[in-house]
Amino acid sequence: MAESSGFLTTTLRAGLLAALVSGLVLGVAAMLAGHPFWMPLNVTTQAFFGPEVALVRGLDLTHSGFGLLIHVVSSLFWAVIATLLFRGIGHAWIVGLGTALLALVVDYGFLPEWMSPGWHLAMPFIGVVAGFVGLGIGLGLGLSLAVRPAPVHPVRSGGPAPVESETNHGGPDALRHPGPNVIDQRLQRIDPANLVTEDPNRQGHGPNPPHKVTN
Image 1 (cartoon, helix red, strand yellow):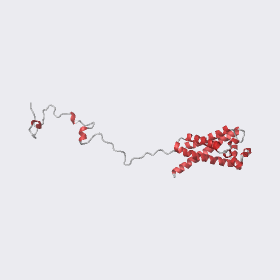
Image 2 (tube, rainbow, N blue to C red):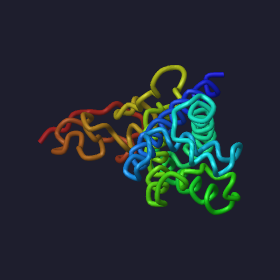
Image 3 (cartoon, rainbow, N blue to C red):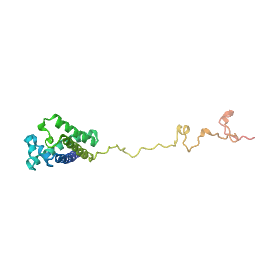
């Protein structure tokens, strides 16, 4: 449920920002071409009213309002594509601008002219390209604001792993590998001058108690 909510939020944010940024860019491009700021919205309805809609320069609900609705819905559609790509690629600006390039190729390369956004009726084609760049910037900005979940690392139960003591406490290993603070019994001799005791077994006396040796 949380994942679906995050997908919807990201899509809405990216789509609305894409519609806003591209709409502003297209409006400026239309003004530079000598048309009203809202002219790109009017010509967006060419699929319903034909290319003659380019002659409608007024701001009205039938053309401008309907064109705004088409523009927003189209931006949301490309935002869905961008959000799905973002899940796999993970780079907001590459996905945003790449999706805008895909939209340009589809709208003006594969679809028939009457199904295109119609922006070419209100501005030179360089303005149309600028509008798609604005679409990509809006998508990239919306995706970059999405909070991607941090990777989850498994937590070991039962606390931290026990640390093996550096010092062995018994057994054969305690003799073979004494700790750093333990005297290695193999490196020292007991009674090196042979003044205190000697091994009676070496003299063949059997298990007699040791005796002192005098000079």
